[in-house]
Structures are given as structure tokens and as C-alpha cells.
Image (cartoon, rainbow, N blue to C red; front, side, top):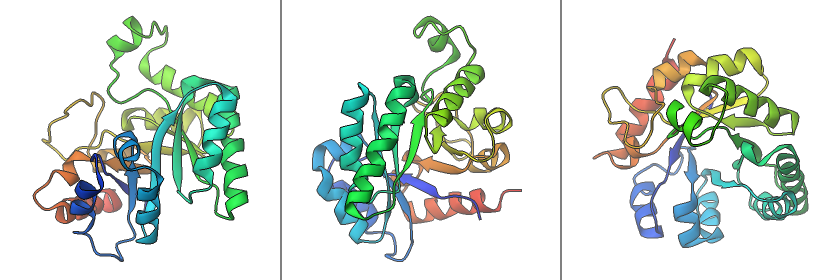
Length: 239
């Protein structure tokens, strides 16, 4: 059994959220992702509601600021009882270490497990061209992602968010004792939308992803439950 297939709830309000969530059995044991759109619209109460329903939460706010500001923000997140949360690896080693400290302090105070800290490497929407000409990065995509992952690991992160296409290189160069959580997951023949570096669940399994994040192919499906289970089966039983 591999890690979770995390359903990305990319909706903007409570009504849209429960229109999707209420279709799933209460004992499904799913991990769901709450991002900026929903969190900024509904606030921490929506996290509590989903936790009370038995869902595990990936709170994906991608913090990036000076270390003390990130630490204070992560103390609040640490108190919530979520399972995963994120910072940008480009924020640097001091910021990542401060984020981890904040999570540990907040979760200890609340008496809940410390969330796994995942560092975003390069967004799956970033192309090689954007990396070179907009970020002015001298490394190619794989080397850049590996470099950021090594930084994140040294700084106390538990894993990274990365395209599935970089995972095999990451496992070789960063190690197996680190989480590689991969968005940009699409069924075969599904449009890429605004994602540039994508893979199917089967391909992600073969590359060595630790967990998947899937949004539009599930939440915009005519039958989200069936779409979820189809992708989950492909993910769990790929060779």
C-alpha cells in the first residue's frame, strides 16, 4: 500500500466543498488538500469541520517570508491538527528551519501530532524556459529540484512537493528517507490544463512518488467518487 492519493479541494466556498465531500462515504479515510482559495474564503473553521468528519488535512498555504513571520504562522498551523503543510524551499534554510520549529511548538502546545513539513521545489507549472529566462537559474530543472530538496532536508523538512518527473533523481540523490509528494497527476489523455510536468498515477508509482495530489480530474468529474477510486486503484496496484 502506497501513501495517500490526496484530493485537492480547489473550490472557493463551503457550499462547493460539501457538494463534493458529501458524495464520499464517511469512513473513506481520505486525505484532502485545502489550498489558498478555500482557506482564505472560509478560514480555519473549515479545517475543523473536515477534521471532525474524519478527514486528514493537507493545508497547502506555501508560506514564504522572513523566518520569524513564518515561524509564527506555522505555530498557528501546528495547533490545528493537520497532517501536512507547506513552505517554499526558495525561502531558504533559515526560513525552513523556523517553519519546523513553529510547527513543533504549536502542535506540542495543542497536544496534537506535528504536521509533516513539505517544501515546494519548483511549481509543476514552471517550464525549463521559465526556469532559465524568468528565474535566471543556471541549473536545469532536475538539478534545481534536487538542489532545493537537499536544502529542505538539511533544514528539517520532512519532504518536498515536486513533479513526478524528478522523483527518481531525487530518490537517488536525496534518499529514500524523505517524502516526495507529487501534484500534476492526470489520467491518460486528460488535459494538462496549467500543469507543465505531469504523469499518470501508474507513472508516478513507477517513478517512486510517496503520495499524489489530484484535483480537477476528481472534483470536476461527473462522479468524483468513481474517479477517485479509479485513480486510487491505478496508484496502489501499479507494478
